[in-house]
Amino acid sequence: RQGIKRKVSFFRKKETAEIPGSLPMTTVTTLPKPVSNEEGSPRIQMAFSEVSALSNGTGFGPTPRNYITTTTGEEDLQTSAFTLLLHHYGHRLFGSSAAWLLWDVAFYGNKLFQSSFLLALTGKKTTLLELSAASMLNAFIALLGYFAAAAIIDHPRVGRLKLQQYGFLVTGTLFTLCGVSYSNLSSRWLMVLYLGSSFFGQCGPNATTFLIPAEIFPTEMRTMCHGIAAASGKVGALVASIAFAYAREQDLFLVSGYASFGACIITFMTIPDTTRLDLSETDKKWRLILAGRKAEYNGDANKPEYLSFYERQMYGYSCLPYESDGVFNYEL
Image (cartoon, rainbow, N blue to C red; front, side, top):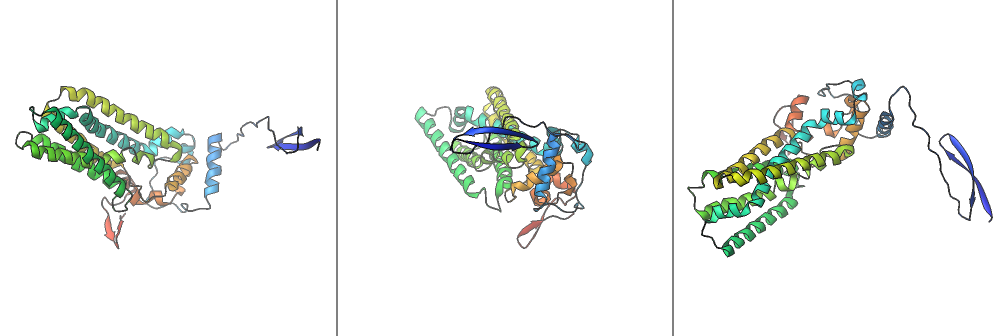
């Protein structure tokens, strides 16, 4: 065949092109200008189209009676996406960032000054061989903790939130006991407490602080939020590398313990448990927020079991759950 004449249609613009060869192909050389009308910017137009496409699925219905809004749909339409993110998910961003920062104070403080910790536990007369053996044992115990976290992190009765929260609590307790009992306990018992902190640090916050920010934000904003949380963690590592150089041996344990306790409280207040939540629900809610129709969302992402303590207070749920047929519920 010599040549094929085809009409190429793209949006409203039509062009005719000579396309040689035996296989038909389409070429587009011009793009239409973004359509603007009285309903808003191209970002809002996209949000409206996505919401319309999703409206046939689940997660939409009448406004729940416990849903509290502090801005109107018109105000949301005139607000940037980042500002909306801070308004609706700012507490989660603060919680995940602060928890990661405080954990890296304890974690990197331990790793950068591990020789100081081990010498404080084993004594000044410890030989290099004994110190190396203690370091290898500590690394092995920490590795076991990481494997334990991988085994239980998806279990519905454990999940990300409990693993991080109780990991901080146990680790902080063990560090604090090392600091408080530094002069009263033998080196053997101090070593047992320290090895326990290594296990529960890995089977807990060191496995969850980087995982939780990847699940509690809408997909569109997830990478940025995870980056902010990770950067906050490196700030904590920097603080530890400077502050721990001037701390006494006993204070090394106490600072690590207090940082873990602070992270535990922040986790309890601001972090939701998304272990069993379909993450697409978070995206559905976010698209409605962008479209100025957030009150129309009534899906799983608004259920109290997938909200943080702070969010349950905002929505008017009871502080603590009650168990019925093996399922935890909350009352308004």
